[in-house]
Length: 246
Image (cartoon, rainbow, N blue to C red; front, side, top):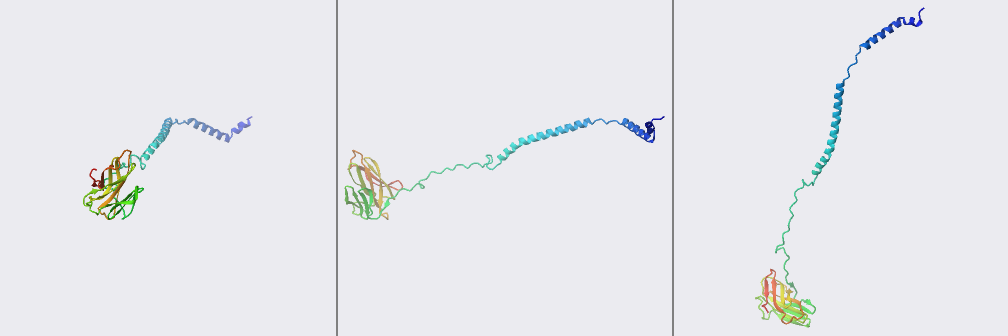
């Protein structure tokens, strides 16, 4: 008696299934796995490693180039030291010449009869006839020195001297005339040293004027022979008129 499964397997379906199994087994037996592409894998790995090194090296070079670029850019900024134009040489101001220096002083021009106070009680004024003055000892008794009475030659340089004082102070004045150029200043040589005074003139350059000065007397100096010389200088520094040594 046959087994039911055996009978079933011996049927047409069993025969076809068996054939398929046998065919698949034969096909699987004949399959040969292809060799692994080890050389290609190694070459690809080497390319990947080289690419990574190149990327890292490039990044490092970029980091190095950044400060270099900054240096180059800073060097090309406006005002960089190597691009700055050479400094202009320092200008030296020329020393003032005689023509650019302050002009020399000239006499004070006063109106006829205008009083000039040289010191308390010591006043002077001019008219066309000559010089008037007062001193502290005689404030109400003006004294007079004429320039038209013929006692002086106004065409020849000359200087007159009148002095009055006490043991502490001497009041000095006089008339100057006849010099060339323009009178500028006066120097009075005294027993106590040189005293510088001032000049006054009438308008219109009359060719004469008056000088005056106040000198403080040192103890022991005599007042009567106090003045030794008077020199009126012109605007060029030369002698306009001078007294002989006294």
